[in-house]
Length: 546
Ligand code: ABU
Image (cartoon, rainbow, N blue to C red; front, side):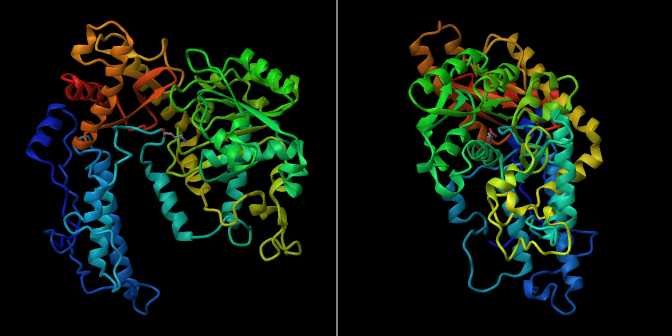
């Protein structure tokens, strides 16, 4: 069935009633207001006879290009409006086989003959329709949420510029912006002005991989040319609640995931520093060479902050590289109220900080920040002569591409730079404080209820709130392995129904000896207390009879 780009995903009568009952704002229900020949009162453009070959750079292609892009902007605007409206769903879930079979004319298959632009616009609209609105105020599923309009504008501009970050000669403005933004981040961490280096890279896992790579090179520069056989068996340390990327880095870099020593955490998910010390001693006694400790500032599930000063003391004592994975918690450095939780970060040799998480920058925007200048370059440079000619007519230290383990590198800095201009540091501080206030609100609400149980005691340090929902029949059963087996199945069952209905979204996981529990995280400044209330009501509605 062929449809127009103006077609919309209509909610059913039941959906409307459900959302109305939650008495949230009443935006136009699913009215995308997309112009085109179907819409009254708007100039209509017929794209059915136009193909991509008719757009620029075709001669006389300017008008068609303008109308096509304007129509696309209408589709995107409709999507943005819906994403931010409580009266629309977070998702319109379909199973993989349904999407593969093709829904209402939306086909993933690639044609031999060119589709016309009308079809492409419908495809663009459908791509968004069947996706997940991660900017919706009731999307709590991931650490990266929100839909910042300035950030989005930055991403559009970046795609339009379509350049590569490896050399100043093709990215003069972005290279200098990267320098400015990284310097700002160094100063927020608290590194002296003469220190500090870094690079934007694709995600926190890559940032953490850089940290292990640099630490190893710092201790054994020979590894770059002679490989692992030229150096002793290494050991690195990270907490049981840290991100899996530390083990992955060890595997990728040939150190071996078995040589990552996992240090126990306390009941709040913080690394126990005395355990770190004894683990280092034990590794040494077994003939391993400890070289690196990862401390986490904002663990993925609990949002815990490791004791950075204690860990820094231990690293200093043993002469180890200290990395802080602040992918999630780094944003709190911008809050005068919360930055105390990262005290000691200035003592780190390297820091991972993802602005696409707590700062709400569109994906992806991740940094590896390194205290020692020049180390990234020394570790990674291979001086490809077709890119990094030393006899260029400008200061070639601005050709930063050889610091990277990539060749082609996307421009991730511009959207962050533009958002920082738009909000100022104070704007980021306000939105981060707001997210933590939402977490506190949820925490106090759940603490008062007998049908919910918090996973760990005390107020969350970050915006992660972890909890179980106890359906009626489990509320009266005392904790036991049998009850745990039942409880383990509750969160996945609720999540299944939640996704099929699509009004909200939250993640769950088991952790160590804890059976499946929900993790609610707040990083979307659009989320308000009414959304937190909605989430709780929704979990009860979907789960009370389980
Ligand atoms: N890299 C951790 C992201 C996990 C999450 O969004 O839940």
